[in-house]
Length: 223
Image 1: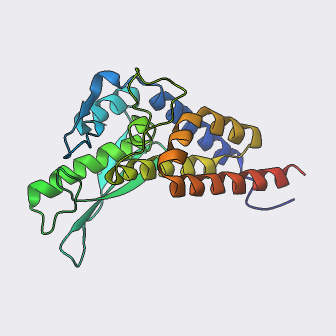
Image 2 (image 1 turned 60 degrees about the vertical axis):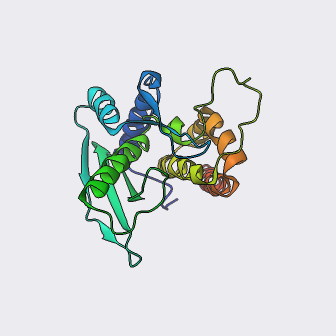
């Protein structure tokens, strides 16, 4: 049989390496580095500063590299920044608008605004490699909340964190080559996915749809 579902040995090796990097970064204890930002009202998102994110990922993988793409200037006066990160062949890219402390796009931002947005974008790109991704997927729930309690609905502005998580999950689903591993991966990330289903149903549906499509593709490859 032939088709895209079959990958050569190098592709399989790349996936195994990517999964090892992902698992290593996801396992790092980020609790001592978590900070909280006052974004107005009751919305106080948790985050890791770009400096700490860079320190942690570089300590784990000294070969880590990052690059900022050209900024995109939007007709309404706002600006989008983009960042590419990679550890060997494991790479991710993310874009982010230049925003104020309330997560609203800034029109005609100055150099400092753009610089701050780039470093925020870097931290989120690193999260897409696995480090601190839980902060963007609802896992940062206080320990006093019983584990069987459903996550509280998030503020509208907070929905972005689930989109970041979905980007990372979709990329890893697409790279999978074994059906059993794909199912195990879903189980390993069930906490992230459960929070996503409650707080960002449309984002969860896109991940679930991709998972089912990939599972069907891999299943056909075994017939």
